[in-house]
Length: 180
Image (cartoon, rainbow, N blue to C red; front, side, top):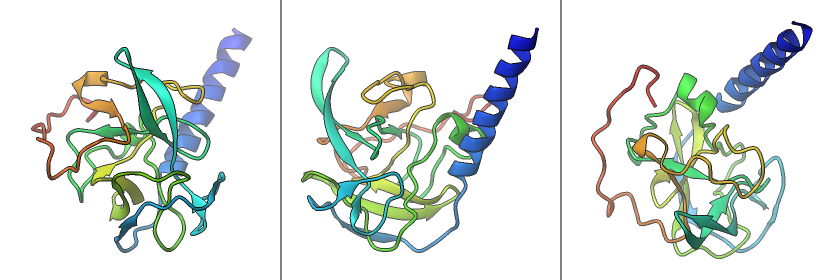
């Protein structure tokens, strides 16, 4: 019984921490191309790379995926638009948005064929790649995992070749009881 209580307390604290991290202040939108300068860190700044790349196997294929500075896989959510996140509140607890806390434009540790930008939305200053808002997944517990790929037919790993949101067909947003 004591182990159950400790586990429940630990999970509750983790959920509260995820929700606190997902909250941010609103700001202005800025765009810019990715850069190959900078180094990764836990707190992004105008000179630190907020995006890294690595190879991973997704749907049986080896692809180059985007990760956060800690190496956690980044995902996009099909119901999002280029300016509005469809994943907020409790959804953002399971799919924490990648939020840019510095001024300037986000950068990448390696050259990307697409564009990194920031948009102010309900989650704060959320980072986008080619217009797709970026998230991590609470079900990934180690760098390079892709456990969120295909979840509910709406969540997908961000590859370096992800097309622009304007070029990609958008799914009609549907809401489950939890909105994700």
